[in-house]
Image 1 (cartoon, rainbow, N blue to C red):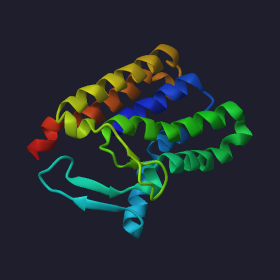
Image 2 (spheres, rainbow, N blue to C red):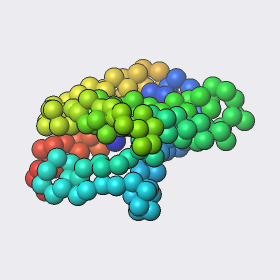
Image 3 (cartoon, helix red, strand yellow):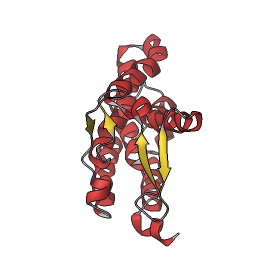
Image 4 (cartoon, rainbow, N blue to C red):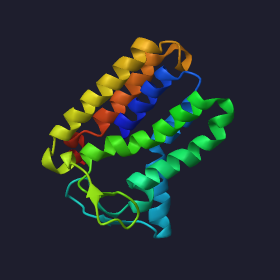
Length: 182
């Protein structure tokens, strides 16, 4: 749901234009950035599954993607933005936590409540709807980008439709039809 995360950043930018665009765009992807680092350090585990699903299974992602740690990462990431005001810091925190909320419908039950929790959440649209998940995400992107364009034509240098077009292109390139052609 990379494109959906970026679309969420645009919607948050429309709601709080004083929040730095770079912080919102990094914030919505922060959990995945941490995931990559944690996998390289051996803290989290992934198994490669060529020719199946997304090409990998997420075996242990509790430190980057659990509910509790998502809140912790949101609090830590927004802390430097408190000097810009409460609304800006809150927007940045929401950007980080939105990642968990947007992953919840897509992921199978691999999103823990906290690290090493026995309870894991996820509705599994990636698995339940092998191509349908793409349309669900497209509707989320359309909703967020529609909100962004309707409220924020002056952000990104007055190029709001272009920002949405880039996100749409990212989503198209992540389609299940192009992925299977590789």
